[in-house]
Image 1 (cartoon, rainbow, N blue to C red):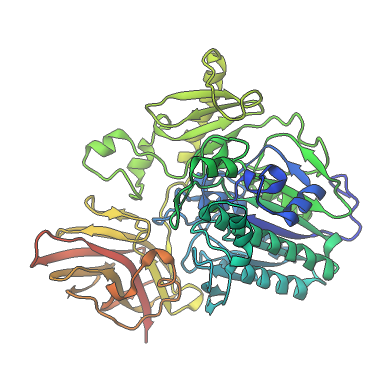
Image 2: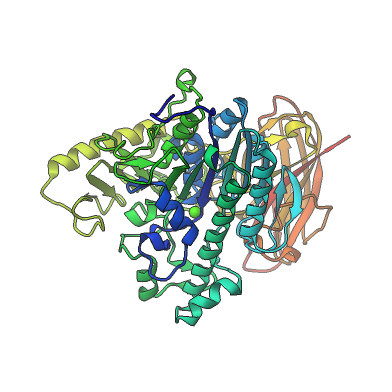
Length: 606
Ligand SMILES: [Ca+2]
């Protein structure tokens, strides 16, 4: 007996459903006038509904907190791309703890916690996993337990297929099924049979498509819930539903939603959108249902995505006290009305990237994009420059940036954050003190703001890829982008990458890149005392071993991307770093165009 619930049959299964960029107001149950979400509405009607539930403002930060139970900056995640989306390998993720205690664990969909060997779901506590490539909503190509798989049709349907099959196979045992859908993340796409009804009633094309996508997501949630019934696991499974961040107003396919459409998507009129620390960026539905054990209830009281980790481990009956995990989350048990009433808690809120200090900018260094954070920069990060906030049971203090100062809102009276209170300096001072103290502590965490350590020859693997946008150090002129390291223009430019050599040996090094005609670049790649070098002057096409690279939509035209063999390097057990240097550049056409480095591919050779 624990959490006040009878527990004769042992710990329950857990079905954790995560929507992507689904706003609170994207559900009919929450006041959306047009979208049809009967399955999620029914789930909400039967579940404990948490009204004051917060997530982080973007995808990778929320997934980091979900899986580790910690404020995401502590985990090494400080962005959604540019190498900032890897959860440090020393961070403990709860699926591994479930697995160790006898659960069979599975995950299918959007991982977004690291995309190279060692960081994938199957490396981090899942018995089986499908890594879906972002954001290919149709005919998704991904990795199933590390092997390339081409799925057909709508990704939302295929993700459900994987989960349904898993639940059927494991119905007799204890399972944890994590279903992080990619819907309704933009670009918005949906089958005609879902969108037509919305266009027929006069909704705009973008909104009709979005709502079609949400309805398709909803019917797939329905399939999951039906599967629990048909497999007889309905009463032995806790269902948890949430989103990872607030809604977006802009879609790459359709542009920005009109004011009218945005009003329909955001019926509560919350301030901000995905990416913001305003309420609409960070509020999410949270529904938890255990058939036969929980009663439908509306739960008030502050809680956050950090709480999911200890709650699931509590449900599973796993004692984590002795592990000293330093979680920021707390168990939400008991799943009963009023359980959180009077909960004294402060939530710390931050946007994804840290703001660099002024002196860093004055030195002529890059301050935008994803410049690596070295020890000096980390130490110099100032709380006063950051987009951060703090929320207690009633008040929320928001610091948008250094210039705008701090604004205090009474969310009890002003949930839309329309009017900053200027008379409560005492509360501002108190919350601000807490907030700044938190930031100073977080920034000193060992994993905070670090670059990934690339695992070379992980689990005996022979082929490994380092994404060029995840360096530990770069020459100051280079510019690190979402998916490539750009602006290679001058001899002396360099990038370093942290590695761990799991399987020592000789590795063939290839560079994958974009190059402009009439340019010639001589690169060297070095590790320890070894060094190989050669020039690249065109789009070469050496043998590819990539399985995800060409599928991630951001990469564009593959004909413009080269793959050149540079040479063979010995990597030893104690090799900690690979360095790419631009030794010479020959430009036969002005103005010079920048070379873009996409990946460094390593293949072990006999
Ligand atoms: Ca998201």
